[in-house]
Figure 1 (cartoon, rainbow, N blue to C red):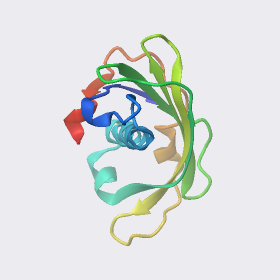
Figure 2 (figure 1 turned 90 degrees about the vertical axis):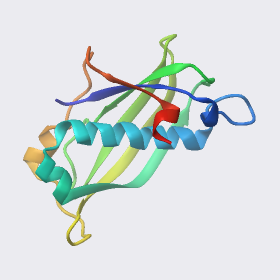
Figure 3 (figure 1 turned 180 degrees about the vertical axis):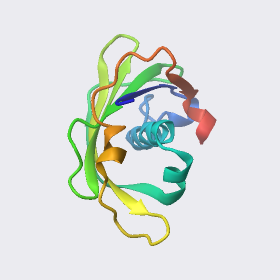
Figure 4 (figure 1 turned 45 degrees about the vertical axis):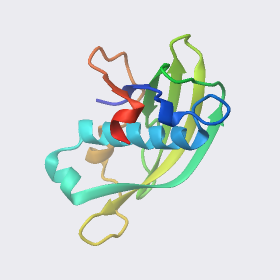
Length: 147
């Protein structure tokens, strides 16, 4: 596996006073797709030994999403990590085909036992590198399912 996709449907709790998904919710969705990608590619031993933390988000908001609307999130890591960190790209596309949100987030690998940063080994990085392809088995969740 390289890239990963996840469909998310906005729930009423995701909507702000302007009638669309709140910007803070997009950050939660970025973390959700990144975590789902890790869970999909990592072994049980890897998940037990390592955790990922965000060190930076850069987000461009390009469109609005309302309650009941579904977006497809895509995430990929285009370049090998630098030490303990790598940049993850995320894009959410609406049913109309328009990009709603794009982001680049920097993640760091942590050793769960020590809490210290770990260099991302090439074998671990290989599971993330590349763009997502169309996935007929992509996961779909309602945003309110994981609050």
